[in-house]
Amino acid sequence: AANEADEAARARAEQRRRREIERRMRPRTHEDFEILYNELEAWRLLETSKIHDAGLGPDLKQATLKQLLHKETKLLQTIDRLKIAANHENRDVRIAKTLADMASAKRWECEDGSLVEVHTPFTTRAKELMQLYNGLRLPLLTTDERLDVLLHVKWTVKEFDCNLTREIVELIDREADLLNRGRDPKSMEGLRRRVANLFLHFIETPEFNPEASKFTVSAAMAEQETKMAALAMQPQPSAMVGEGASRESVGIQV
Image (cartoon, rainbow, N blue to C red):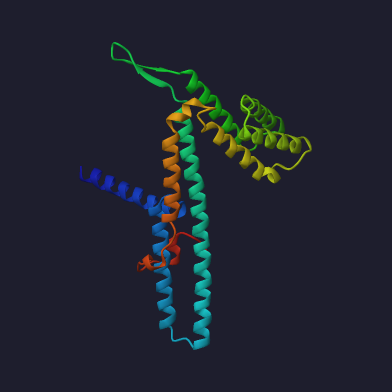
């Protein structure tokens, strides 16, 4: 029994260690970024103390402090890039969950108390739109596959006539023309993001996707929370405290 308890304790400790490494290598939450900023500040304070205690001449001391500042700036830029990637990933996760919730079957309770899952015309419509959106986001499609996805999206939005749908159709026609001309897909990344974002707006509009009416408020709140979290992630120099960290513990290479 004692051996089993020791083994379980070691397993939990290893799991915590892996989690801490993961939080530094792939930060996703406000708390994860706080760890990085605090450890970076602790490293800066430690390195600054070492420089002051090294007995260097004024010129060499100044040059060494300048090198330290350069390294700190590079590390801050790396953290900012990680933050941007995390915001994008968190947004993608939120969108995927919202679309899946829209497309999920309704659960109805029968007279005998059992539950039955039923797809309604609205959830079926939401599922079709989700599949089209996911198709727009798929990488590495052949030209014919991409054109097929674009055609389905085009005919879907053309059921309605408004500024949004006309803009989507115009962008789809532009991309289709570029594809037929043999343009490199990498040069169309911005255009493809625009098409996907506009089609997402289409999906989130109850007029085009009735099931979206149940998610409009929650989606807006989630968007506001995302913006607030991004603001909260901004580093506060006066709050960056900590001791005993090394540059390697930050988990970023200079």
